[in-house]
Length: 323
Image: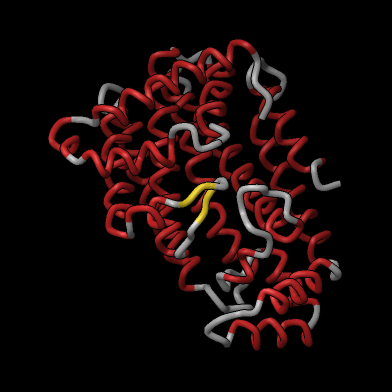
């Protein structure tokens, strides 16, 4: 997401706040240097795009929300996101993220899990000075993200997973936090209707964002993630699910591959290439376009306002990147 000078200044302030939080922690939970080191390893200087803080700034600009509260929300959203990544890497046994060793690879699963828990407490502490409804919304968001992750783990290896069920997992994993960013900006501005519109926008855009991530897994579009990682983790991404529905022999071949405890890289590449050769990527793009249009429709009269128009441009570019 491209940033304006104003957004750049906001992100610099959010970055400084992140560094401060992860240098000292908060209260009793600040006692473990190892856990704070784990948080810093993932959050600071790791190549993260700061998508969520940027979105908070743009939502706030469109809603007319005060910058002080927006900084708290931006930092809290980044901490929640980072906590989810720490936990995901344990669940996935991931060894690299953004081209660097994961926290669990460096310090073990216990540090990664507890480090993620620490980041969640720090995120809630960031919101303590704001309207308590924002804190309650953050708790509900974390709960939804957790349920979605459980659903994803339970769906591993299941090529019969309904697409609508998979969509709900994508919304929970990514759309819920995007929606929280938007709704919080609206609440800070005291504009309930705007909060509702921005939450809906964020949820749809989060699903589109996740579909884009699934497509990148197949075409190597994410330099920080090995190609065909979803195949290796037996995760039924949207293109894989669609390909399995379209091509019964391919579905059986994928099922046979996933039946083994280990998978040869050559076999993974073969089936990943076979998925790319079906109409599944095109069908996934069509579904992504629908989510983007639903997101833009949710903005209503705010669509061309400062901040919202930049979010609109970013949503459009997300879809155009695969054309």
